[in-house]
Length: 433
Image (tube, rainbow, N blue to C red; front, side):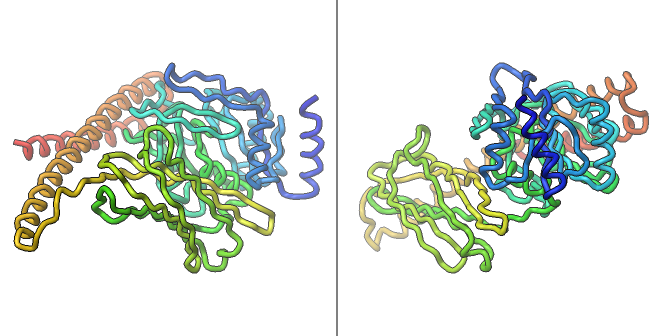
């Protein structure tokens, strides 16, 4: 009975106005990818209701593919039948925009396989766990927050990202391009052209942060991001922070001049949460032309080494279609507050400067060493990932999942990259000696 009203609305909408179809027949995020990670998803109704609250009132639930839709989102772990798959294939080739969630293995794997995307035997496993909470989902997974930014696609900002739980993939053709790579170089999301249509594919759609998910909803309807462009800058000054002296944390959000009056901007700053600097700021807000500045002033009473909290930015756009919301997180910043020992008279200033230079030089050496070690660690992780990919590739070739040409091409590519990594590692080892 719960599908009767959506289906009636679907029939009316297909005649009356544009809409985005959200396919959810049999939806259930049932796949388990490990004891330390999880995705707890709400009902399809909760998902669509939240998206509508963000301003996307044209999203409609359905248990059938309707090729009259302006865009189609296939939720993960749904029950697609052969008829739906044929309609989906026809829809894409004829110019449709589609978002595919490959969280569970199934028919969608077969669909993308013919265009060169292969699911890995092992899920992606990072090193740092974080939690994502949205009204319709809670995720504990690994941060993937360095997108390959592409304008006029859902991945159009450095603030889009994922808290990822799920499979990694390999692309064996030029049809799809990577849009999200893990720190170890594995692919977890793609965008590509099929026929005259466009497809966005990911292994965990509900792992998308709010900005990425909103961009996906924006893009799938008409093929572009309608929300005004914005730039964000976080500045913490002065460089040296001292006990008993103020320092400042500024968040600057710049929007197009013509949209300055139609955008409502607010921030949420969880400065008192566990794990961040225990400092209570005095907050100020000002506007300079088309830039909104949120300034947080601190008076530290003790020396400390800690991280200022991430800041949640909310932007409401009063658009011709109504109010549309974008939210995203500006990462936290590490700070150090020092004590001033005593006043340095002018006669002793050269000695003090010399001491500071020594300290800075020592810190620079430590920082350089840390960065070099981090670089070596990342290169070794990538080398291990390539070795696993070679094994996976050989297995797929032996079981005839890929052709000999694809096998040879990818093998040469992986071996060349491995050789390059090994050479770089040897050079770094020689530099240490």
